[in-house]
Length: 549
Image 1 (cartoon, rainbow, N blue to C red):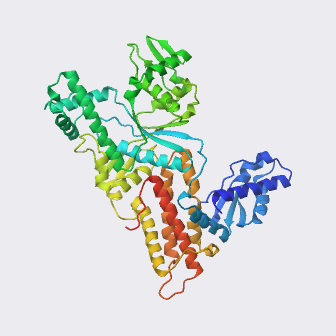
Image 2 (image 1 turned 90 degrees about the horizontal axis):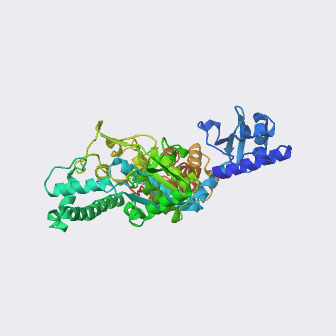
Image 3 (image 1 turned 60 degrees about the horizontal axis):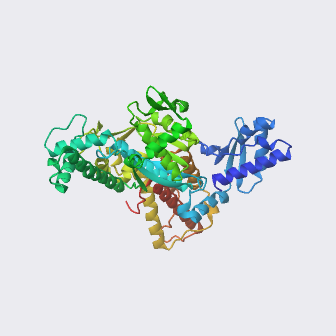
């Protein structure tokens, strides 16, 4: 019996109790929840449904909990139901009911943990979106890992997800990038506000190799050559880095297309016509304070040129025209103002502001030998994605960047995540999978196959592992709902711990001439289920599930 099935059983029992005693069924909440108690001595699961229902039903929580305990004690799959505290109900499952979780995992296979609650959501997930003016730094790398994992989690729960990369190839940063390339090609110092680092010289040399006479061209023609070739080269490197990191995008969106196609002008005129822009001080303004911004934002400046938000308005409208009903933007720590701004854009076009979600991520700090790693030799400014991958590899980098909430600054110790030991979280989880794969090979050599007598799995460590497996779908659902893929990583660490403890306490394979029994077969089935869930969870993070380590 999975937690979801148990919750349904508890709700059905509560409904029966209320009906039998003539109490108001409307008092019963729709979302009856069950949780695993922190102390295993309190039972396999607990529920606070009596405390949530009693007041509206006109009875005391403990009285309702007592009736509910009596009702549940007679239900299949429930070994015991006990009242605790002010009205909690602690439940223990019958062994056969726990074994049903293993059967469900084995039957579902790779689809275990999936759902369909987001089947009506067409999600545009925009993340990374770094301008092509330099290599991706650690902040971008964190978003590449988290964004890709979030896309996988949302898709697992039924959403149709499009990963999109938006880059500003129409602004001042590109102009400064081009000026830096030209200066390097002419052996001149980096211009004020320009970009340094070895990569500038490398790209400038490639531009000159492609167009040998580019430096001698008139300024406008020269800059256009360096812009066209240089931006493409830099963006090509970014794409290559992301692909090597396991993060690919369905759409690469160029801001310049919004200006070149007239989409910016169309969006602005539409908002003027609807009265959602107002004119003051010679400029046109969006009332972003209506959505909590600290001040209204200019869309058309007093000199008649569009402000940056004008492209944001056109971009949002473009996303909606492509059929997306949820637009998620993943932005860096210095972009808090965009939350209200983009919600105001949605409202101005007549949409529910909740069509827009903005996730803000904090910075990443890298340490080695107890000291911060501050600079990339190639980028010249910050540690790059390539630096991190070279130091620890894709799996360790992705897992380490995903396993913590993006709301907080992340410190990564290179010494820890490079270590092949249990204090390295990614090694700990992957080793559990590799250990299970090895066990499966050894079982095959012995002719041992998974069995179906799962009611034999009555050891406390078996129960802990089974209940942990049963919690996986709820973890994935929660990660999708809260947009927090780190919950999957933390769950995998709990699952790995439960498996290692089980393995140490319960022998799976027969020893010597020992006869193969149904218990061996049942334990092997449990191991196959554990391996499947570890693989499913790692796949959601874009991290490999190794067969050997």
